[in-house]
Length: 237
Image 1 (tube, rainbow, N blue to C red):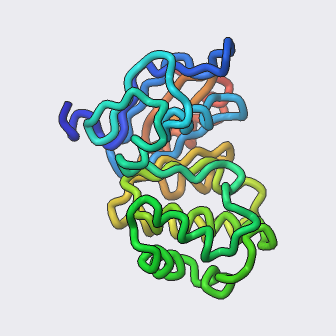
Image 2: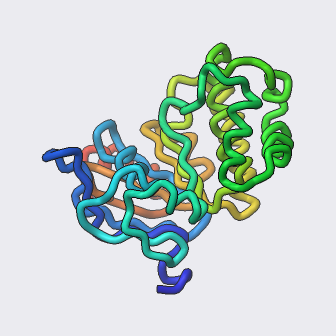
């Protein structure tokens, strides 16, 4: 399958479960390039889908491609080598490590540590002033900056963001999404999962809505915004 046919990310009929509880029930999704906002209410399956894409959860059925290359799923190492990076819900920083130690951990994936640090501090100058501070002592917004900086510093080909704005003040959310938009302008492809849609739709090139473990609609951000109430209730008209 060519890159053009597969897009940056393509899923066909993807199913996934936790034990006997099926959460994804046949997900079809295509991210051609740019930023896609993946929306839906709590329990729609959004975070589970990111776990499948990032290799944390093996699908029980269906197929997945990244840049035209098929992946069986279930291997975070394979997806990392393919350039897929996830910023999980809840920030995912190491609270007892300093800012600098958190950042240099990403050098494990082949990017020199100093290059990682320089890039992270360029993206978020505030982190440079906190470099010796333990991550767990920082505010929630600063921890989210750190998580995003660590992911972006490794220059992923596909960035997955899970509830980037959760629990943060609007001014912090604006700053984070400003950086997301900047990275998208450089050609990075980004899949943004959000329960609260407005900010994600502002930076997105395409949008999709999940309900009941399936993608029930895709389209331009303006179109999806107009239909959100209907789609969050599962309408597919």
